[in-house]
Each structure stands twice: as C-alpha cells, then as structure tokens.
Image 1 (spheres, one colour):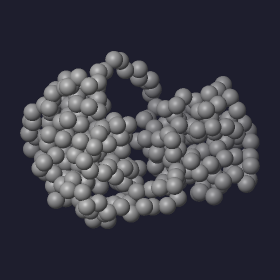
Image 2: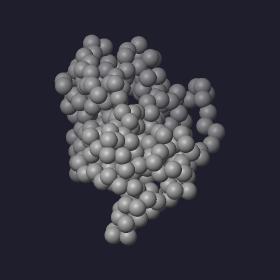
Image 3: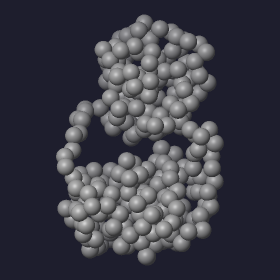
Image 4: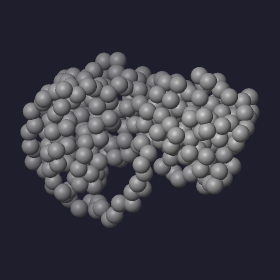
Length: 306
C-alpha cells in the first residue's frame, strides 16, 4: 500500500505537530510519501520525520494561502500512484479532502481515531460516545486524522525531497486577506496545558481570571460553547464538538458544567481538573481531580499559590 500524506503548512512553515501525528496513523496503512504544497524549507522539515519514504514538494504561489481548489487539483494530479490519501483533520484539510474525494468519486472518512488495517478505520460518532468502525472498498481511501488520538512521529529521518509540477490555479477561488490574532500563548490544539472557562465565569471582564491562571501555567486558553455564545471569549477559543478537539497533558475546566458537546472536545486529555460550585456537574464524572468551590474564591488562591 502506498500512502500520500498531505502535510499541514502554515505560511512558510510546516505544522510539525499535526503532520507528525497524522504520519503515525498513515504509517499503519503503508509506505508513506509526504506532499508539501509550499516552500522547500517546509519540505526539508517534513523529510526529518521518521518513517517517511519520500517528500514531494510543490512550491507555487497558488498554494500560499491554503485554498482548497488549487490544492485539491494538485492532490488529484498525483493520486493515481497511491492507495490512500491522508491528512490531519485541520481546518484546511477538512476543507480540501472532501473536494479531493468528490473529484476521485470516492467517500471521505473523516476524523479517524484508529487504524485497524489498510481498509478499516475507527472514528468517533455521537459526540464521542460511540466509536464507528468503517471498512472502505474504494480504490483510493481518503481520510482525515484526528491528531489528538495519535502520538507524534519522531524526528531523525532523512527522506529524499523531490520537486513535482504544480497543477496550476483555475481561478475558482481567490485569497482576499488574512486576519490573524497574535498571542504569546501556545496554540490551543497543540498545547500541553489548557485552561478553559465556561458560563460560570459570568462575563467577558471576569474571563481575565482564566487568562491569568493560564499565563501562570504557560497554558493555552479555551472556552465552552456557552461562554463563547455569551460573548465571554472569542470563537477560536471554543473547545468541543463544534469547536476544537484538544488532548493536552493537563486540562483545567473552570466554571464548566460538562455538557456532552464540550466533553467530546477534551475527554482525551491525560489529566482533567474541574473547578465548579455545583457538585452534581457532569464535568466531575470525567475529572481526575475535582474541586467543589466558587471559582472566584478558588482561582485567585490558586494563582497566588502558583
């Protein structure tokens, strides 16, 4: 089996964590070739990942802003040599791979969390409450990988890097502008520690207490959907079924009741700490450590202690 892994590229840099975790899944399907639609520097980074047989690089301005249409055309132009096309389940790849699957007239298997064999995959359904096993007989398997469930592949490899021709740009879409929020904190989906606030925080002003705790821990900041919908936190902080899926070493849930949709986005965290004044809150069912207390009393004391 030959697998084409589409690397996640952010600007000029390889998104190493997402690509390395997707590589772990891809290696269970067959020999892996990595496609980098971006500069050669990103391809050189991909070549250092252990288990990569070869790296293909298409350095063209058409791929500079991760538009699905030109990227899908490039992938389809190379698809004939591969039995599997795999990518991390990032925003870019969730946008691109369904288009690739449609152009190849095959199904897309989204968010796989386990590889049984080269044709059989596991994926979460019902907000993570059940695991669906899918067997595909398509000639080309197209899948996105839920990276939070796989360990990152090691570095230390030295795969050859080969340039491939661009598929061009048919002009079906165009980049207008990027509006990127900058932060000194770690990126939410790859952070080792995440501190999240929920509806119990009460207001946007009070959410500063969550940020202060996160800064003390060197953590990323997350939020429940209730907090985001109430305007306490921006959309890109949302953790859950309709937000981001995280699996840090430590997840601290403050003022979060633990609705099933939120648990779907963080229940794979290694250690879960919950602070909530309601001792019946569902979050305590998944927490390793729970503190029944008023967050406005407990969190400042925790910050002072840290």
